Image (tube, helix red, strand yellow):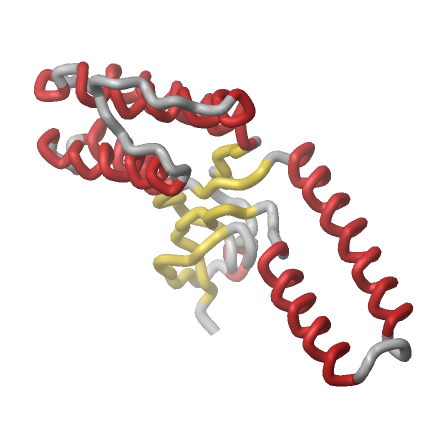
Amino acid sequence: MPDFLDSLDKLASGQMKVKEIDGCKEEIQEILYRMNIEYNPNKKPEISEKDRAILEPLWKFRKELDEDNWDTFSESRVRDYRKRIFEYLNFTFGIEEDRPDEGQKLSRKGHRTVKVEETSNQFLDNLIKKVIRPGFKINDRLYEYYRNNFLAENKNKREEFKRIKNEIPREEFDKKYDEYLKWEKQHEFTKTIRPADVIIYKSKK
């Protein structure tokens, strides 16, 4: 979805042509498809009660791209559409925009340097000159929820390995531990979904 928001920003600013709205349609359709929903503008899909709050708004957002005449779009219209999608992402998934301030110190995790500008002022070293594209992150409340659940489950798994270490054959233990390492890697996460692209100052040596 961050890429979809980027596409809407380009559309609103004139960097992307209206005919390229098909790319936006495909991005939403791909998400629906991964959730086993085949998009049909003439038929509302059957969505289970537990998935309705997540998937039904997505289907409506996709249908809106068919119903509205995007050939006569205005910047305010695209901005309104983007705003509603972002509110959906924020309310449903706890996603927030991460737009650092100019003059803020570069964060290796939250920011991605796309250009460096040399300066003779050493006090500007590693400070952000300009934000090219905002990033996205999980809000603090949801991050703590995910983190605490992950840590609790991870602790239980590690205690289980200590318990069975001398109770099962080494080969079987190693196999289970390899599976655990894969699980741990898959469930690792940070607050940052996508870092913000920035231009930074770098002092001349």
